[in-house]
Image (cartoon, rainbow, N blue to C red):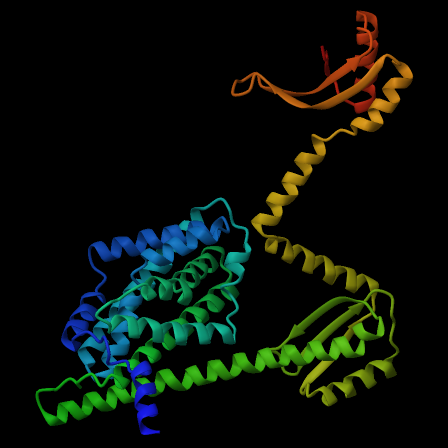
Length: 435
């Protein structure tokens, strides 16, 4: 049994392949500074990420995250906490503050100057963190800390930079400042804070697990003061983190219970829900519903409010919007808000569909009608064609290619052209005979 345990331990032993601790600390310290090239790289990465958010391009955002040096001071803070090095911790936090201010300034200036102010999905997704963001930050931070302590760094570091996504929330916060939208600003900064805190905590845990030597101070009294300060900071970080995680878990759980309630009481009974909105942060919480045709009496609404408790939905008031004017107004507001959520891909698909529709002709239907007027015509093909392409005189016209038993005379061609112009509502049409 002991041999089996020892064998299993060799698979999970983090000391295997570990880099020399002094070299790791030197590398961590060298990556926390934001002066010279690092500051320029950060500013450029922020502009790239802001452009990516502005045009809703995930590829551009990922590229910005890969070149961003923001992870350095956060990992440095984790190491400072783990080895009780107050100077390292202080320098890391100072540089993180500088990086945050620079990032917010650059992104705010960009979005203020940008002519495109629409909040696209990549922006909106960074304004409301959830429980999964905590898990990504924590486990991503663990991977980053483990990779930092290895002899062979491998591929995890770029992956951690992408997964933990420190840059997009900062850019979104800058967008909120540029537009004066405090909801966007605080939501994005909340996500950024969660990422920073949980990456720092996961780094601290790895440093402790690998037993990095504690920084020795000049005297025992000073060493105790540093330990007390660092321990207090650890508690300051961990306690809000537990609260964040608990709040986000409760919100996720609440939304699930709401979904169960609406599906059981309405959807499963064939009652179509036209409008649904939850207000989790109010007291009491509110669930607003609107229906396509169903109307409820005051007693029925009261009974439904009573049923909420049986679904473990407490401190919640159910409001059913039955006034058609109010309902229409709310739906229109929701539609206007959600217009910005329409992804660039959907817009591109819609444009392509419209373009295809505008260039498509019903050849079979047209052939049947043409045969009545011109019995000699056996087959046709009609499509749009661009003349003088890549010039200032470029124009797109419908072109008809026809096959006829006998060649049409000029009068018949003129008649066919005039008929097609009227039939297709086109000012100009070209027709050619297939020899």
